[in-house]
Image (spheres, rainbow, N blue to C red):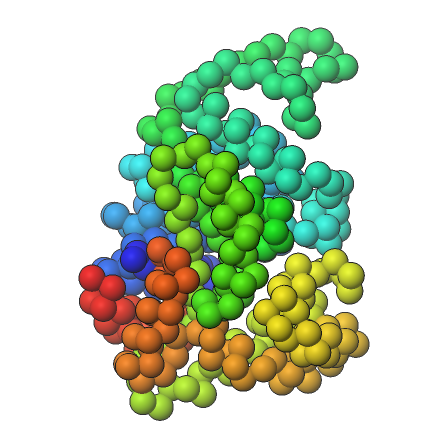
Length: 339
């Protein structure tokens, strides 16, 4: 099992990235760089490529709507070149509030667009001359008429960069298992994951043509020690934000997920409170069991049990956010346990 961390998008970017540099020396395998509607991730990923030596550097996520498929492919190829083949391309649909509210692009056909973007990226990296019929017609019809089929000008370092998809809904998870190199689920509870996503994953795997198994990236807050259990509380505001405020009342994928986990009343309460502006009360309404199952915080024996729970749930890359008093020591210890 590999070990990664998410780069937090709140705080001093340079300071956070320098912590990742230190974590690489402690045994970290990969870092995932978020974008949301803050700093763009490719700029930060380029910095990390220059400051690290062996760390895999992934986007988690680049929204498929905010860039053309060709630009996504070029960005991944550029990062792969400057990092010496360490790029991971994490893609996702994001949601209509960000895509339409921030980027000013219509949010439609997320499954079809995701499939087409992934296909075009892989064709571009293979240096094919690109034409396409579908949601992204190339060359563009109805323009000046001067567009012509092209292939990428530079030669990518690799002709197949690993593609990871962020997905939660059944159809999107099924698509992920079918076409992606890896899966980036959010708010992953290992004990409950199979009941929520098992059928979708199996349906996608049945259609999978890739010869490599699906890499599954999931985890949570990390702190190892006899007196660190209260640090689980740090997750409350983030979970409340996602479950309560990431999307409209009837279009919140994270709220739907909490309900599918069996916390229907709690999900409704968190959303009601959050949308009413009572964010602290929404955070307080997050179930303590949810905090425990979604984290790796506690004495060494407990954290080892959590690691095994993630492993048994099919996780192949443990993605942790170290929040204890000795984050580098905790990552080093976890690396030793993972082997």
